[in-house]
Length: 157
Image (cartoon, rainbow, N blue to C red):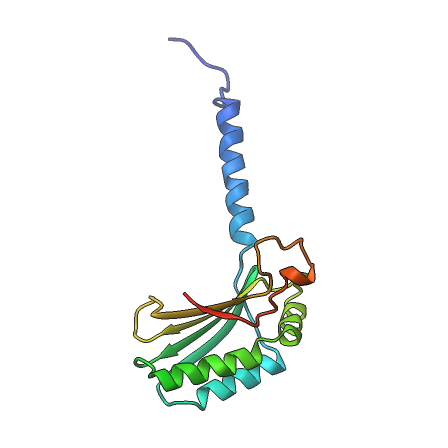
């Protein structure tokens, strides 16, 4: 019987394994959800809660590079309520307020997109989603006036 002296395995496989672990840590560590709590976001949330008693929860959080506003409701919002929530959201989502949000979470860039979602039941599926974006294109390095949308247009997803 042959004795092997301290074989540790294939060094290439070890490097690949360590690389995979490192990538996993970087990806999950850099994508942490951060709750947003600025004076403007608190006022916004208070305004939304007062629109209807079917609004159960309003969460505003940042998940790089986007801001998410998730509204949980106990039932389907009618067109009037959905329109009013969207109107109040448009009033909140200004360049000035998004700059304040970015500064509050130590984000040195523009918030790329703002997502407004409605969840109308107890599951995690989103029934309605709208979004606005800062840049017209995906090129965030192009800061020309022609490429700035500035959250002015909202889209139904």
